[in-house]
Length: 101
Image (cartoon, rainbow, N blue to C red; front, side, top):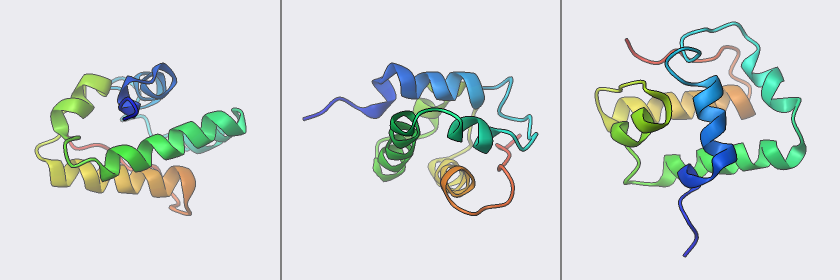
């Protein structure tokens, strides 16, 4: 069995640098272009990481808070945010979602 993606240093660093308490609420429109300026392998890592944590029934608010210091009231709100963030980063959502609070 492979290790959880949230233990990968590159994946956790993305969250700590770009989605943490300090930056998570700064919606400047530059997160998607910033991510896509990195190597294809890094973008693929972040994409697959998002897919893994969204599919992981055990990944919830406590795990996300450990990555970012941002609290979510419940798993449903967190997973809706993660889906919206995924759609922003890898789909065609026009704006970066804002965490609760």
